[in-house]
Image 1 (cartoon, rainbow, N blue to C red):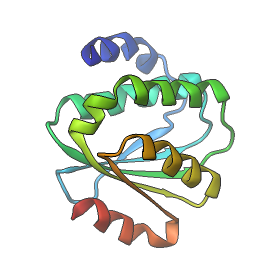
Image 2: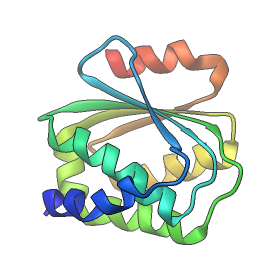
Image 3: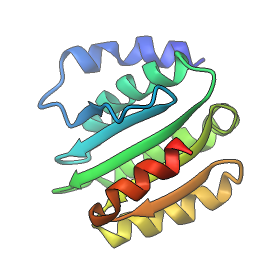
Length: 142
């Protein structure tokens, strides 16, 4: 099912506007790391999912490090789509992801993420601000 999603989103990725999601290297092959900048709308979500799903499908297990640097604007439809994806794929996410470090200076994003991941008990999510970047990286590398 997830492979179908990747194939379905290839068109979106090839016709993307500015790349909102950048892959980061943090020196640990067990950690997938990304940085988000820009608006969070439906098209940006679809583009980001292509990159995320490729990483998820290519690994048996992983930890996830995610920076949200600049979120200029967000679309409620994109947030809803993200939440639906997490619920629909909860079992696979729980089986593949152990820890998530979310780095942002926006309290509402941290609060929303921490609240959402209480419903996915097998994944440990911790939110950090940018002053705690090194601590966040260590959290997912442990």
